[in-house]
Length: 436
Length: 95
Ligand SMILES: Cc1cc2nc3c(=O)[nH]c(=O)nc-3n(C[C@H](O)[C@H](O)[C@H](O)COP(=O)(O)OP(=O)(O)OC[C@H]3O[C@@H](n4cnc5c(N)ncnc54)[C@H](O)[C@@H]3O)c2cc1C
Image 1: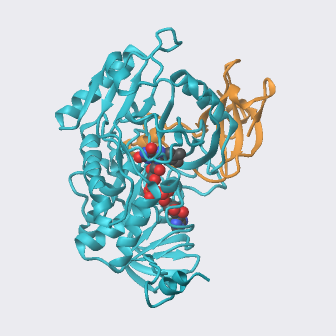
Image 2: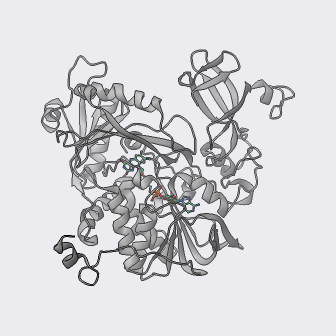
Image 3: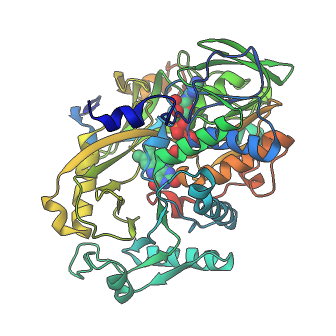
């Protein structure tokens, strides 16, 4: 055995770092229980401890830390949305993201590349102009660029006028970025655990306990826990968990048999209008760095960025119908390849390395649902569909504030669940249906 | 799911179909409460288990009903909408 190994490796000299202590046994009671140890749940736990001094918190996950959509997304971070409410919200997230590596002392590989949304039709160009104006008005750096501008920003892009759907221009959003998704989850987890938060993996919540319209605890596969406040942050399975907090009251069942999400109508419980649909993505073998910006085509339904490792991370729209299964399909790959080759013809020689799916929790207006619910003490963070990774810091921070004060701060108030009953939707489809 | 058994055209490739969402009864816009109307318009969240859905065979413009498990993607049965909504159908008043 080499001498150096004995000299430096033996315990007592330099101990291996174990930043995430094992959580041990569940306590019978916590102040706050957070369901879902994805980026959102972990961030909320961190800000509860950091900003509000609330550390008697358990984060529960049926699987492993960050194993849901957090580890499956294509990590696009941007704030070039369509509604002022959305732009303001995502812009705060970008400002938080920029400071995270320093705050955690842990590199999340935050990389600002610029984000291009290509327009192939006059109508698309009009939407880009609209987004640019809303963005600029709110101090967000977005502008419409023409073909010359595009050729400079992204030389490998095929701008041939002879294509079936030639590129006409693009929305250029300079702050557009990618980051390492796992590191974001781990960074929040470690920082939260250091402040006393307990993270319990392989602990599934199977029931929400309520008494006279107030939450009193949760039932789990490891026993019951009493608590005064619950935050649900489970993305793709949001309808199922919400159903445990209050079943479809009145209006009658929509069909017998399946597990039912909560419904509105006579009983007063609000519906959770979330459709769960698989969303797939894939990466190619690593290539030399050649693609700096993130490139999205809403008209062709594809997007691509190049990771720090050189892989091309590619995705498209959600699967065509509702399903709770994280399986990959050939149809997705086929549907992706043709438009991708129209944008970058030389990729025809490149092989796909991995393909996977996550479960997107889609709302009717392509905006998230955050805030209070009809059950007192039960808070909701859902409807993140294909766009929630970029919101991890801001949502965590603002949901922590909501849980701590019992009130939704002004920034997220427009995203309340009750907006649907009042027909106050926040239409983001034009800015969110493909460009996640 | 790769193949769907269309009641009109027989087994066809799934890419020929579009899903029309769960087959639920439409609330009457004139008589229903605002809350119930919002519930109908925006829909309830996806249920896990066997649901009854509208499906559309695009090339022949034919709507029908499928019973599909949203957990496994297995289709248990497909049949013409008249079976559900027609005279004698469970959800129909005759038309
Ligand atoms: C392929 C793909 C690409 C995407 N691309 C982007 C992108 O480029 N940019 C972007 O901003 N967003 C993107 N998204 C969306 C983004 O990934 C999600 O919105 C976001 O990660 C949601 O984070 P979360 O923490 O809320 O949920 P998740 O990370 O899904 O965490 C939820 C956790 O809850 C747990 N859970 C569920 N039910 C229970 C229960 N009953 N008991 C205990 N635990 C439970 C799960 O195990 C899971 O770990 C993409 C998504 C996918 C699938």
